[in-house]
Amino acid sequence: AQSVTQLGSHVSVSEGALVLLRCNYSSSVPPYLFWYVQYPNQGLQLLLKYTSAATLVKGINGFEAEFKKSETSFHLTKPSAHMSDAAEYFCAVSDRGNQGGKLIFGQGTELSVKP
Amino acid sequence: EAQVTQNPRYLITVTGKKLTVTCSQNMNHEYMSWYRQDPGLGLRQIYYSMNVEVTDKGDVPEGYKVSRKEKRNFPLILESPSPNQTSLYFCASSSDRYQETQYFGPGTRLLVL
Image (cartoon, rainbow over all chains, first blue to last red; front, side, top):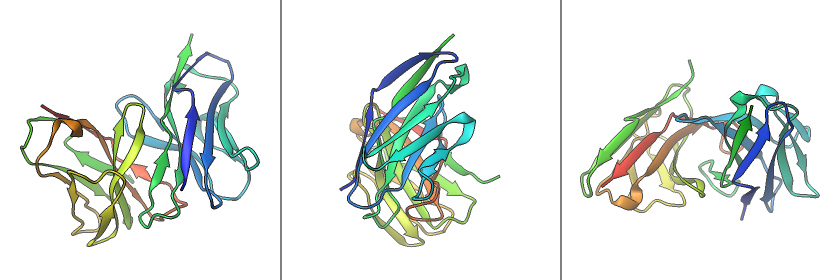
């Protein structure tokens, strides 16, 4: 069975500081991994995805994530936080044992950015 | 513009009163899902559909029904809502089961009194 764990339900950084949101996964098959962002009162928007190509994946808004098989991790980073990055972030793995394309989500990490 | 739409966006109802949340996508996607989002639990799949007339249960299907009579529409039906179904609901669609992006609707916030 596949699962996702996000370490830290709340992360607070200062504007201009490094953003690091942690995600670890468990999967018995090579995983497809995703990061989604949810702004207040909005749906989820894809930031980036890993589907077995390059291990360093670049996404929108300056975010990137690195797939590390040895650590079963897919941490999300951004070199310099902006106030507009304040949102909730979800890591997800595609359940490849499910016929209907289910995503298994982590619990979410709320990012706050201080001026 | 490619999008998934849901209606209504907000709904307050009472226990036992049947309701339907509509979902429509304009991307000709085969795969559609309903998720519910609860604090500390992330999103959990309720039902999914692989194509017209093909649906199956997700992780938390109790108390919900779905139908897929047309490719673009995937309504979620609560026959007899209960307070534990108070949640934020998202519809999503995708062109592929596993690798491709799921596009999410804006969400429906439901309160059952």
